[in-house]
Image (cartoon, rainbow, N blue to C red; front, side, top):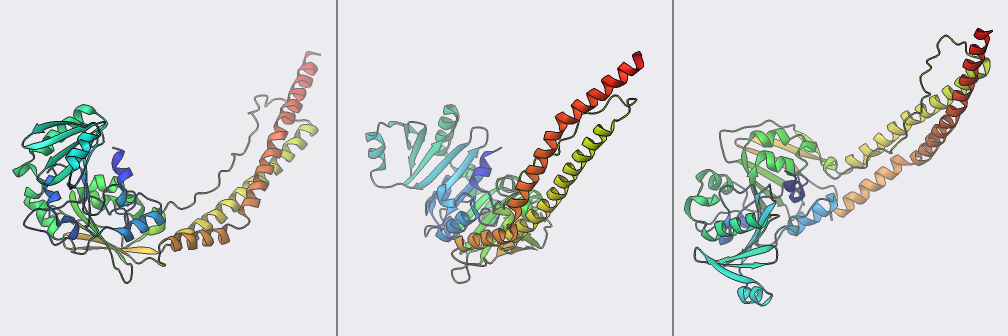
Length: 391
């Protein structure tokens, strides 16, 4: 299922997804403290909820890491829901603005009724208006879109996520200062973020359904990601530290051409002429030079990549009772400065590598140029050998 990877791609500022809002009784966690949470189906694959005050610092961190920002999916006080993965069906729910129904109808929307709610179909979306909330459903399949819209219009009782005691307990256990709160199956969340880069993908999968909170301390800018499983009996182990730079898509190694090798000599009974042996020696020297350069390039590029990753610092990962917590203090703020420092560290360590790559390409070119000559000389040797045998 590809879609979740678009919604969250990083496990620090990326596990920053999936969540809800809630009717009375209110949860302490800010993103859950609105009636919009009542719209979350109990079987939602993933939910992203943004606190009414927004998540500007989390968005800034996501931009520095070059991953999707939570604000791309939901505005402050809104909820984004992944309803199914097959057709990438989603719903974006928010308090209904005054005059929203008239505005949608004025833009060509077609209204219908279901379960006491008003459904307005316009283009590839259906907006459900109910109890002061507007929930816009989108889907890659029209039939799925209509089905999900009707379901939201009639959602009640045990069909709601917040009617589940385990979900409410997990969500209520999250810190109260979260800017983003999330809910979803651990393996879905782990597949959507680069959890594997921090070494916690297996831990998230083992926890089953999880509630996630993301908060940034306004003074220290420390990022805290708290994961609470719905099933309190589940536990998972994780490494004590993880490299944040791995999430930020570090530079990869330069692409190097493969060593060109001569075709296999099937004429093993034909003696090699001095001219052929000399050509083989020239080819060997060219290939050896290219191989040596490739080794040096790889070592230098690996060191540069390591310097880039190190500039981001490490996150600490702790597993407490029925919870998993990731903490990371950015080495600079605003977070764009971290990427700039990482790029500078990379450039310093990578100095001269481009010249080595050019020399490697030249060595490969020299070796490739020798191959036709080598084949030609060998063919001449074989022909001379055959003529001698005929006599």
